[in-house]
Length: 156
Image 1 (cartoon, rainbow, N blue to C red):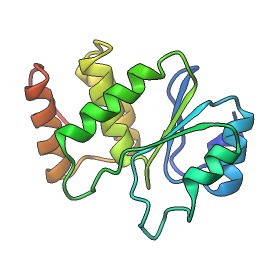
Image 2 (cartoon, rainbow, N blue to C red):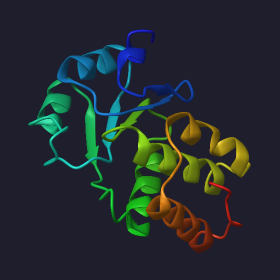
Image 3 (cartoon, rainbow, N blue to C red):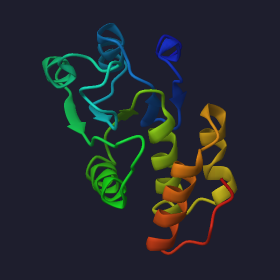
Image 4 (cartoon, one colour):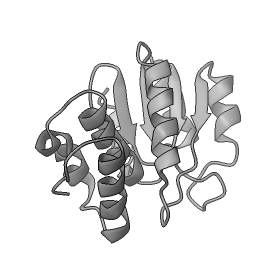
């Protein structure tokens, strides 16, 4: 896993879940070699940081590719709902989740840990704060999702 640590903002969250910023084509090969079975991309595919054909590259490696494009300036509750569906569908698989810089992903994972896995909010946001401090847009998104899914307000 040390080699995966070279991927931008890589975090190994559990034996089956890792997150990062945008991996290169070579790094996707390493992700496959590490045993990951699913690549979930929350970034945009037409952005300057994205790979030209990430879906094709991932499928050629024999992995499942799922794309949920989350707009940086306008994350939606529906995006989080789709994320939960994918995480639940593949909960027995090794899942690698990425976006451009592991900012979107870190928030989605924290919300998943709180609302689905029952983590305490302070613990769930530790990994978020290893990457960044959510800005006003993302803080509002966090509050909205926590409220809609029935949690108390978070200190993000």
